[in-house]
Amino acid sequence: MADKTVTLRHRRRFWRAPLAILSVLATATVPAVALAQCPQGAHTYVNPRLAPQRPQVSRQQLEAAFANPAVPAELKRQILDLFLNQNEPIQVPYRNGTVLISPKDPCIQQYLGN
Image (tube, rainbow, N blue to C red):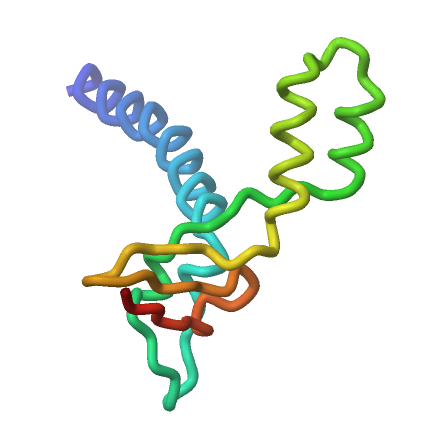
């Protein structure tokens, strides 16, 4: 009987850490867009929760990359492109055209037909 008690206690302890880590990861990986709700008159073509997002690069990250001599020139150019294009509308193919989605507010969408 003592062996079963020790085994159950061991199993409980074994699962505590992974469950705690999973709960932290689940809350940390939910993007803010997933919580976005559009106002009631907004006409959306693409679900805002599924709209692709551009990576956000801060000015400090850009300056740190350019100040570091170990960063290759190609990577610096990619970081600069990400920084300059992060506020450009996101283009998503939709039916026979394209939907432009605002990177700041995914509820703002515009359909451009062919």
